[in-house]
Amino acid sequence: MSKPELVLVVGCNAAGKSTFIRTRLSELAGFDVLMTDVYKARTKDLAKNAIAQRKNVILETVFNDESFKELADLARDAGYQTSLVVLFLDSIEQSINRVASRGTQQSGITISGSNIKINFNESFKNVATYFFYFDRSDFIYTGIGNVNHLIMSFQKSELISYHSNELDYPQKFAQYSFSKDRLDEDAHQIIIANKDYKKD
Image 1: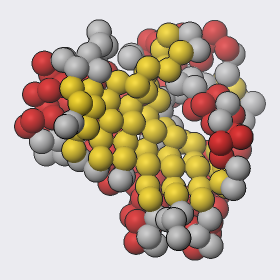
Image 2: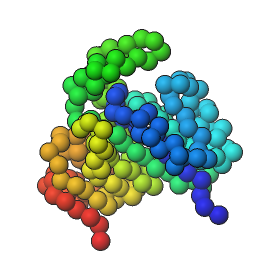
Image 3: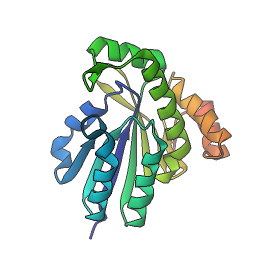
């Protein structure tokens, strides 16, 4: 019997999380889809209830609250396969511009520049600190039109693939995560060298 799945789709404001999920709904038949924009403070409780019932869960969040990592612990202890899908933009400015261009609103209130900045920074820190909690993590750059670019993937803390790029985010991720002892020396060096890599 296959393991149930918990998938967290995370990223800053306007990284394309909702679109990423919406365009894959046919693949997600049988998943409980939980969007923090919709369920707000109830999201984590709904996820916990779904895990208790061994349902497949996909949860969308900015990940500006580190307590979402507890869902990975809960799911792993319940025998789940856990995945983290990180949709990222390369800068706070990119996030601000994306929000402005689409006139995004949350709860009927336009997201302020200061909130976008806070969300960007907190999401970055939580991703860089807790990515290894998940069985697999995929980092996907969404900053060019409607095209998604897979930049790097991990199995737990082990880097399994990296695609060279001209982005700042992966470099900053490597530096921050390494400084917190979350990333090993080999992975750190591969990302900093910015050369294509695939684990044998």
